[in-house]
Image (cartoon, rainbow, N blue to C red; front, side, top):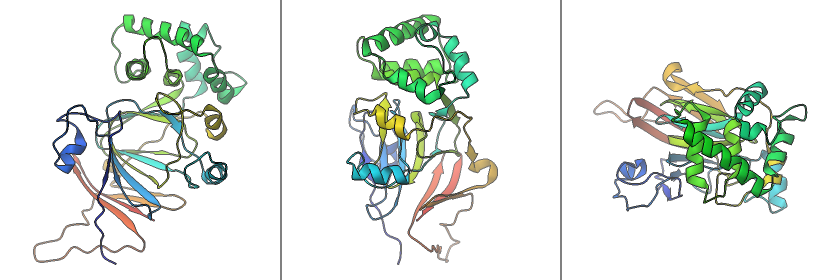
Length: 319
């Protein structure tokens, strides 16, 4: 079977880039409409078990996690999930890309918590009960209490001065501007002091396993994942949140994030339960004049030839 052209689908979620500088209209040679966000370009079909997305995030995305195979199957039967499939996910940066991913070491969380009197005065930092119990207490706070605690924190940080993108406070204030309304404060703001702040440079990649609590904050990238729509949200969103399910499926183990770099290693090879990702510096899609480029695969594959700024690579996603 020869190659099949897949027409990408556009998603205009509210967190996408707007205006002439937005990435996706440039890629598609479209004239962007005023105030219309361009968030994602989906590359795949319902019949493929994998999905590739080009994402262009201006605003923070939700605090979320995805189920593993067992959880997805049982949750689908119970009517909780859209489909019975797990969701492994890899984000590959096309620009500087920031995200929250996985819990910081507990000592780091305790230090950050102690440095914010609004937080430490209201709730003791995580101790012997662990991070899961701590998050349960945070997310079960009465909304008026959350408004008071976070409102005081935001007020002080605004007065304190400018923060850089390396500071969690920078992103907390950004999330507050985008997701808080009036005196309402989104409980997802707590997670800026709990989760690792990850910075990817162009060509670097980060794997997000099922259960890992995360949130994309800003940047352009390519996502590769199982073809699943199963998302459990806990904050930083106007969509439905499901705190009990997040506490059930979430991975609350602390640790440092791992970053893969195609530009340094010359390639990336990742294998999951039902798909593989390969990134190569070799250009397999071109041939010398008078010759035909030939590509062979032993299964259905999605190929993306990426020439973006300093990144020159071929992304192959195979089932």
